[in-house]
Image 1 (cartoon, rainbow, N blue to C red):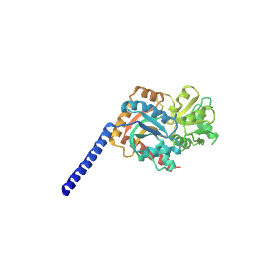
Image 2 (cartoon, one colour):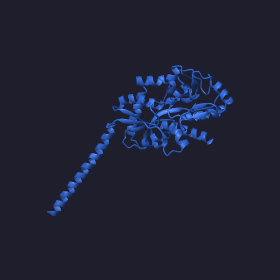
Image 3 (cartoon, helix red, strand yellow):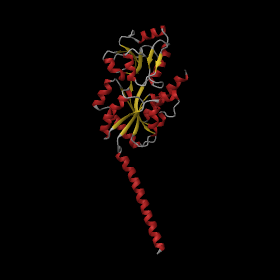
Image 4 (spheres, rainbow, N blue to C red):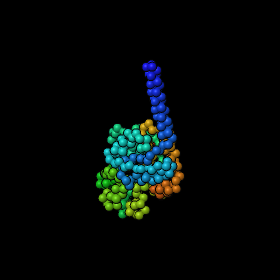
Length: 319
């Protein structure tokens, strides 16, 4: 009898383990099939009102339509971007992702951070965000050539906002000084919106930033653009190339996922991001702010980041 009892007990335990294993496997498959099962979070490294913040909040609406869940932007400014990138890289809930600009390339290089673009899996690059040098409407310069000539006469006199060290705007300011053989002070600003306010208030002489952050002030006639570091769609703004300055720098905007995110999830996010570009309201947003749609999913986005990483490292090695 004892032997039969042991056999029955062993069979019962085996059945229990089998049921648990089957349930676990079934749950895993069900989770992938039903993703997203809760709200999605997009972390970003700067304050509300910045160009990247506005981009993500505008993107969130069409993504909600495509994915059927709320998409929430979580701003984590500070530490040159690390306050956002570290928790995003470490996220394990399967519903937390990272909105990025070229700062994910520049800041880790300049500040030797433990997290960089290689800490993530690519979802998609979506835009090139035109960068501009702008000044107050009544500033004495109307062209970049006039600004350069005045800066040569007054080295180190002018204060130009350029984002915190590690922002692409900061790097663009350094490049402009080198290529134009001039010297001005690049003043760190955490938020592009704050820089616009400071230019309008005559607290600084000008700023380098995204067209989108400056659009309302430009349209209101409170600031004027001297030059674009990239072509600005639908405008006659001259570029650094037009001015004979050999500067190549493009600020991308896109979305990354924590390393190891399942391919099925990334594919859904790629599809939702691509559909967003055709959403009428989102299209109105990016056309108004002169963003240039450049959709590069997955490995294509990685190639863009690798190329920019190499460009910045080469530039910095010459310093």
